[in-house]
Image (cartoon, rainbow, N blue to C red; front, side, top):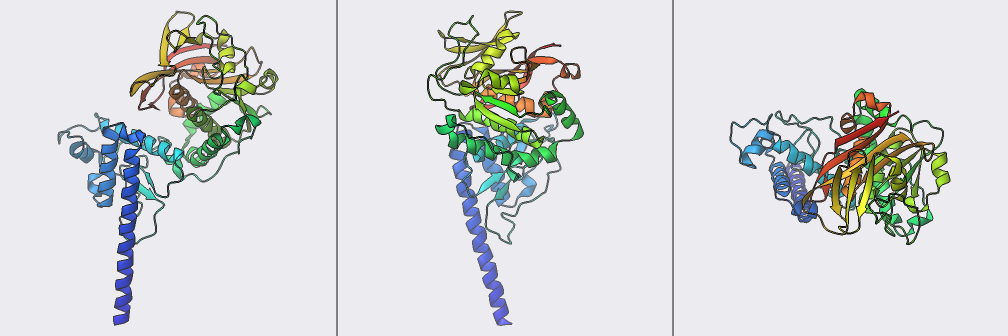
Length: 426
């Protein structure tokens, strides 16, 4: 009997030691997160993240409810209407997105903090097994959470395990192959299960309506990604024609790669084959033989060329070093980020999205083009997420369409894209 009790005591001590070690790892990971620019440059987001992690470690799940968070963390009155005041939900949504971006760019971390959609209770992954409740994932959803649990975020995609179609390795990727391959493969791993499990019939219908011209064409979809090299934007604001050239070795920005990753995940989950080409080396004959998705703005000469006949076009003013979207019918313009200058913590970016049977190539084309890098990421999110595509009226789904999108950028992270101008034709 005494030996049995001794063994039980040793097991309890070992379990407690393991729990303490796990808690230490979680706090170390929290400290790393709070130091990262995704959180350090903000006041509300690190405060929120620290609050929910500490409450989770203390097993104070009663405090991880929307109303309680609003009162204890944000100082709201006890009778505030959390259904009408979305501040807590908005902060939680942004923290989810930033956690996803953090681990997408830092996949080597052993311990990961996740905030599931529809809950304010964080989960901790990558820890040693323990019988204590400190780090045991929970499926409890607070009663007061009214957030849409069907909202698909990048944080949800962390659970995905099924990789999509691998990228093609072209010689132009020598300078950036590591970054691009890691992002595309990781994005595919993160996104496949989320898309398959999260799409309901309505979302599938909206997405299929927008993309149906690209699907089942009998040939792979060509993804043409903008690259950094010689400046490709016309210095004359009235000159929109640009001839692709390879004046310097091309490189791919992180944001362009992130937009590419989102689109490859979408195509893979729909069973579509694709090829990836750099804009500087894409030949006209390729675009004439395949449906294509053009990604990037002023860094993609093919985007500028195909927009040459469009109502909404991109311009670059060399004097002010600013880009803009011009409405050639009304003369109105939307001015974007300044080239080579760090924008304010909060600013607006714009993007053009086009879906058409292009007269230049004779093939179906989708253009995903931001004035700044945040605009391109937001545009890629728009064309692959049903809740944003639902902004487009059903009547325009069957037509050629050109859209101007706007997105609020906070600490370099784009917010939800919304349509500010539309033009359609048959």
